[in-house]
Image (cartoon, rainbow, N blue to C red; front, side, top):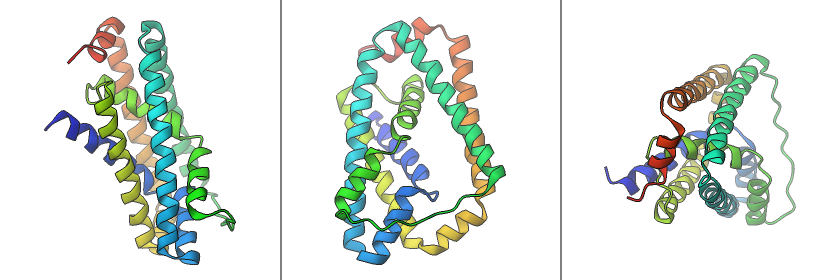
Length: 220
Protein backbone atom coordinates (compact mmCIF):
# COMPACT_ATOMS: atom_id res chain seq x y z
CA UNK A 1 0.00 0.00 0.00
CA UNK A 2 1.20 3.52 -0.80
CA UNK A 3 2.67 5.19 2.31
CA UNK A 4 0.40 8.23 1.99
CA UNK A 5 -2.69 6.04 1.68
CA UNK A 6 -1.56 3.92 4.59
CA UNK A 7 -1.25 6.88 6.97
CA UNK A 8 -4.56 8.24 5.65
CA UNK A 9 -6.15 4.87 6.48
CA UNK A 10 -4.67 4.73 10.00
CA UNK A 11 -5.70 8.30 10.80
CA UNK A 12 -9.22 7.60 9.59
CA UNK A 13 -9.48 4.26 11.43
CA UNK A 14 -8.26 5.59 14.79
CA UNK A 15 -10.46 8.68 14.54
CA UNK A 16 -13.53 6.69 13.44
CA UNK A 17 -13.29 4.16 16.27
CA UNK A 18 -12.62 6.85 18.88
CA UNK A 19 -15.65 8.84 17.64
CA UNK A 20 -18.17 6.01 18.01
CA UNK A 21 -18.60 5.72 21.80
CA UNK A 22 -21.01 8.24 23.36
CA UNK A 23 -19.15 11.40 24.25
CA UNK A 24 -19.66 15.15 24.37
CA UNK A 25 -19.19 15.46 20.58
CA UNK A 26 -21.81 12.85 19.71
CA UNK A 27 -24.32 13.73 22.41
CA UNK A 28 -24.33 17.44 21.62
CA UNK A 29 -24.42 16.71 17.88
CA UNK A 30 -27.41 14.41 18.33
CA UNK A 31 -29.20 17.10 20.31
CA UNK A 32 -28.52 19.70 17.65
CA UNK A 33 -29.72 17.29 14.95
CA UNK A 34 -32.95 16.57 16.84
CA UNK A 35 -33.65 20.18 17.83
CA UNK A 36 -32.35 22.19 14.88
CA UNK A 37 -32.16 19.76 11.98
CA UNK A 38 -29.51 17.90 9.98
CA UNK A 39 -28.13 21.05 8.34
CA UNK A 40 -27.23 22.55 11.72
CA UNK A 41 -25.72 19.25 12.83
CA UNK A 42 -23.52 19.34 9.72
CA UNK A 43 -22.35 22.87 10.58
CA UNK A 44 -21.64 21.73 14.13
CA UNK A 45 -19.47 18.76 13.11
CA UNK A 46 -17.64 20.81 10.46
CA UNK A 47 -16.70 23.32 13.16
CA UNK A 48 -15.59 20.48 15.43
CA UNK A 49 -13.48 18.84 12.71
CA UNK A 50 -11.89 22.15 11.66
CA UNK A 51 -10.74 22.91 15.21
CA UNK A 52 -9.55 19.32 15.66
CA UNK A 53 -7.51 19.44 12.45
CA UNK A 54 -5.84 22.72 13.46
CA UNK A 55 -5.02 21.42 16.96
CA UNK A 56 -3.56 18.15 15.64
CA UNK A 57 -1.50 19.94 12.99
CA UNK A 58 -0.05 22.39 15.53
CA UNK A 59 0.72 19.52 17.89
CA UNK A 60 2.50 17.59 15.13
CA UNK A 61 4.56 20.62 14.10
CA UNK A 62 5.59 21.24 17.70
CA UNK A 63 6.37 17.56 18.21
CA UNK A 64 8.50 17.42 15.04
CA UNK A 65 10.62 20.38 16.15
CA UNK A 66 10.98 19.30 19.76
CA UNK A 67 11.77 15.66 19.01
CA UNK A 68 14.82 16.73 16.98
CA UNK A 69 16.40 16.64 20.43
CA UNK A 70 17.20 13.01 21.24
CA UNK A 71 16.69 13.59 24.96
CA UNK A 72 13.24 15.15 24.47
CA UNK A 73 12.38 12.42 21.95
CA UNK A 74 13.12 9.77 24.57
CA UNK A 75 11.14 11.67 27.22
CA UNK A 76 8.18 12.05 24.86
CA UNK A 77 8.16 8.32 24.15
CA UNK A 78 7.88 7.50 27.85
CA UNK A 79 5.35 10.29 28.42
CA UNK A 80 3.02 9.15 25.64
CA UNK A 81 3.39 5.53 26.74
CA UNK A 82 2.41 6.62 30.23
CA UNK A 83 -0.63 8.39 28.77
CA UNK A 84 -1.70 5.20 27.00
CA UNK A 85 -1.43 3.29 30.27
CA UNK A 86 -3.38 5.98 32.13
CA UNK A 87 -6.13 5.94 29.48
CA UNK A 88 -6.32 2.14 29.70
CA UNK A 89 -6.65 2.33 33.50
CA UNK A 90 -9.37 4.97 33.15
CA UNK A 91 -11.26 2.63 30.79
CA UNK A 92 -11.08 -0.21 33.32
CA UNK A 93 -12.14 2.06 36.19
CA UNK A 94 -15.04 3.41 34.12
CA UNK A 95 -16.09 -0.13 33.28
CA UNK A 96 -16.38 -0.90 37.00
CA UNK A 97 -18.08 2.35 38.05
CA UNK A 98 -20.72 2.60 35.31
CA UNK A 99 -22.33 5.69 36.83
CA UNK A 100 -22.35 8.04 33.89
CA UNK A 101 -25.19 10.47 33.39
CA UNK A 102 -25.58 12.50 30.25
CA UNK A 103 -27.06 15.94 30.70
CA UNK A 104 -27.92 17.78 27.57
CA UNK A 105 -27.42 21.54 27.76
CA UNK A 106 -29.07 23.94 25.38
CA UNK A 107 -26.54 25.81 23.30
CA UNK A 108 -27.20 29.42 22.39
CA UNK A 109 -24.14 29.76 20.12
CA UNK A 110 -24.41 29.13 16.38
CA UNK A 111 -23.94 25.46 15.56
CA UNK A 112 -20.60 25.93 13.76
CA UNK A 113 -19.15 27.99 16.64
CA UNK A 114 -20.45 25.42 19.13
CA UNK A 115 -18.48 22.75 17.31
CA UNK A 116 -15.32 24.86 17.29
CA UNK A 117 -15.64 25.67 21.00
CA UNK A 118 -16.32 22.08 22.13
CA UNK A 119 -13.44 20.75 20.05
CA UNK A 120 -11.07 23.49 21.26
CA UNK A 121 -11.74 22.87 24.95
CA UNK A 122 -11.53 19.09 24.62
CA UNK A 123 -8.55 18.19 26.85
CA UNK A 124 -8.14 14.79 25.18
CA UNK A 125 -7.14 15.98 21.69
CA UNK A 126 -3.48 16.77 22.29
CA UNK A 127 -2.47 13.83 24.53
CA UNK A 128 -4.59 11.38 22.50
CA UNK A 129 -3.15 12.31 19.11
CA UNK A 130 0.38 12.87 20.39
CA UNK A 131 0.25 9.37 21.84
CA UNK A 132 -1.01 7.69 18.69
CA UNK A 133 1.23 9.81 16.45
CA UNK A 134 4.29 8.76 18.43
CA UNK A 135 3.27 5.10 18.12
CA UNK A 136 2.72 5.44 14.35
CA UNK A 137 6.03 7.23 13.92
CA UNK A 138 7.85 4.49 15.81
CA UNK A 139 6.16 1.93 13.55
CA UNK A 140 7.36 4.02 10.57
CA UNK A 141 3.77 4.43 9.41
CA UNK A 142 3.73 8.20 9.94
CA UNK A 143 6.76 9.99 8.50
CA UNK A 144 7.45 13.48 9.92
CA UNK A 145 6.91 15.31 6.63
CA UNK A 146 4.29 17.98 5.79
CA UNK A 147 2.79 15.86 3.00
CA UNK A 148 2.29 12.92 5.35
CA UNK A 149 0.80 15.20 7.98
CA UNK A 150 -1.74 16.40 5.41
CA UNK A 151 -2.86 12.86 4.56
CA UNK A 152 -2.90 11.93 8.26
CA UNK A 153 -5.08 14.91 9.22
CA UNK A 154 -7.36 14.35 6.22
CA UNK A 155 -7.89 10.78 7.41
CA UNK A 156 -8.56 11.98 10.96
CA UNK A 157 -11.14 14.49 9.72
CA UNK A 158 -12.98 11.95 7.57
CA UNK A 159 -12.90 9.39 10.37
CA UNK A 160 -14.42 11.89 12.80
CA UNK A 161 -17.13 12.81 10.28
CA UNK A 162 -17.94 9.15 9.59
CA UNK A 163 -18.06 8.27 13.28
CA UNK A 164 -20.29 11.23 14.08
CA UNK A 165 -22.80 10.61 11.29
CA UNK A 166 -22.80 6.89 12.05
CA UNK A 167 -23.71 7.69 15.64
CA UNK A 168 -26.34 10.28 14.73
CA UNK A 169 -27.87 7.98 12.08
CA UNK A 170 -28.32 5.31 14.72
CA UNK A 171 -29.74 7.88 17.10
CA UNK A 172 -31.07 6.53 20.35
CA UNK A 173 -30.48 2.93 19.25
CA UNK A 174 -26.71 3.36 19.27
CA UNK A 175 -26.84 5.40 22.46
CA UNK A 176 -28.77 2.66 24.29
CA UNK A 177 -26.62 -0.08 22.75
CA UNK A 178 -23.40 1.54 23.88
CA UNK A 179 -24.79 2.27 27.33
CA UNK A 180 -25.99 -1.30 27.81
CA UNK A 181 -22.63 -2.72 26.67
CA UNK A 182 -20.43 0.00 28.14
CA UNK A 183 -18.65 -2.44 30.48
CA UNK A 184 -17.50 -4.65 27.61
CA UNK A 185 -16.58 -1.67 25.38
CA UNK A 186 -14.48 -0.04 28.10
CA UNK A 187 -12.74 -3.33 28.85
CA UNK A 188 -11.89 -3.82 25.16
CA UNK A 189 -10.62 -0.25 24.79
CA UNK A 190 -8.58 -0.58 27.97
CA UNK A 191 -7.06 -3.86 26.77
CA UNK A 192 -6.15 -2.42 23.35
CA UNK A 193 -4.52 0.64 24.91
CA UNK A 194 -2.62 -1.49 27.43
CA UNK A 195 -1.30 -3.84 24.73
CA UNK A 196 -0.24 -0.85 22.61
CA UNK A 197 1.63 0.61 25.59
CA UNK A 198 3.25 -2.77 26.31
CA UNK A 199 4.51 -3.12 22.72
CA UNK A 200 5.81 0.45 22.87
CA UNK A 201 7.70 -0.25 26.10
CA UNK A 202 9.19 -3.43 24.65
CA UNK A 203 10.48 -1.50 21.67
CA UNK A 204 11.96 1.22 23.87
CA UNK A 205 13.76 -1.41 25.97
CA UNK A 206 15.17 -3.57 23.17
CA UNK A 207 15.78 -0.96 20.45
CA UNK A 208 18.33 1.74 21.34
CA UNK A 209 16.95 5.30 21.47
CA UNK A 210 19.57 6.47 18.94
CA UNK A 211 18.39 3.85 16.44
CA UNK A 212 14.71 4.75 16.91
CA UNK A 213 15.48 8.45 16.55
CA UNK A 214 17.58 7.89 13.42
CA UNK A 215 14.83 5.81 11.79
CA UNK A 216 12.20 8.41 12.59
CA UNK A 217 14.07 11.40 11.15
CA UNK A 218 15.95 9.80 8.31
CA UNK A 219 15.46 11.38 4.95
CA UNK A 220 13.31 9.20 2.65
